[in-house]
Amino acid sequence: MNVELTEKRYYSIGEVAQAFGVNQSLIRYWETEFSILNPKKNSKGNRKYTVQDIENLKYIYFLVKEKGYTIEGAKTYIKEHKKKSLNKLTIINRLREIKARLVKIKEQL
Image 1 (cartoon, rainbow, N blue to C red):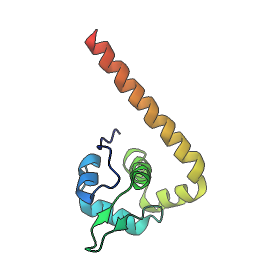
Image 2: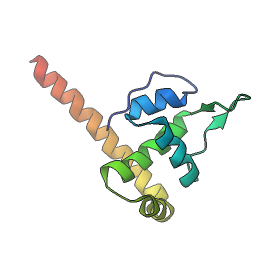
Image 3: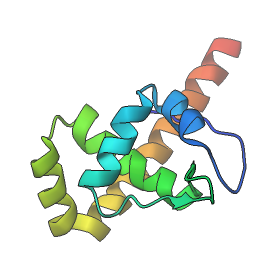
Image 4: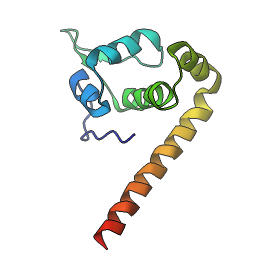
């Protein structure tokens, strides 16, 4: 999973949903289910996601969509393996980025 967002301080729910390729309603649902996901809201109630929120969403997306965990299973897994799993996810994402760069270089040759 490679989520591409421009460098900003805050992202709207529409930008986040488009980057992940999911509906906005799914992200709102995950907010109610996962305590690690808590975006700020402005005076109008619009959600503003920080870089840390995006990282948490990547983690949830990885567990639910890529690994096939149920919501309850993902919650349990997050509680039991929070720090260790985030490190693994970071490493996996970096390796995927490196692979994408290498494939791009190979195509250019």
